[in-house]
Length: 260
Image (cartoon, rainbow, N blue to C red; front, side, top):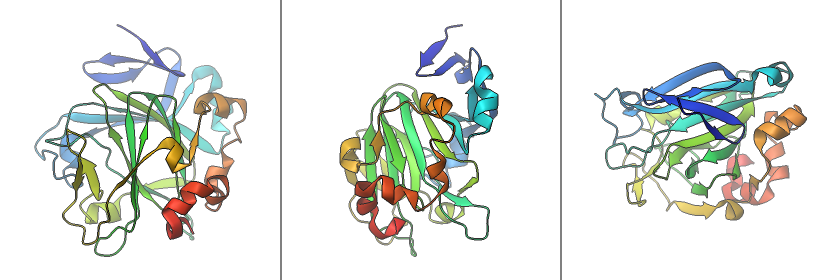
């Protein structure tokens, strides 16, 4: 069985599904099938059991596990098939991060592209449903993209191969899906030719702004796993909502009042 290594991650493909290899272990794993995405993506077939993407939570090498369990964030992985959903490029369900505490404070998230070409889709979600700003950040292997707190986001596979992305998020964060499901999913998608496809259930929808990592202004070039291992507290700022605007003022200006 061939073992593929991308950044710090080694994996194999068994019966069409990724499996962590070597000394990589995960505390949890899951799979999203096409029928599970039909409620948030009109292009998905509600009768199809085909796997669209796979997730691995709190990933570490066995020798690093104890050290990383002390970190305030988790290192997670997503593997996404390049196969289209109907006429649209595949994308994740979409969500926003919130706290289980009484304040419900939002959390930022940081993604790193390990293999393939990714699009990080972000927008706010208002009554109607409606959107005041929609952004798609295109990213290549090695790019690290930060997503602001309180912003709904999804990942798209823009390339012809399996997409592998890592992410860091505060351990206190929970993924919230309810409002997005009520809205019928993300406001935007891309068809197989890369053209923007809009969700007709949204009442107010500005044009999607397509940006590079540099234009977005919330990118980094450090490998997430290595930096986290070197200093488990280096991403503690992800647990503080106000820290995003301080670290990434350019991206904070893009989303304006969404992160105020």
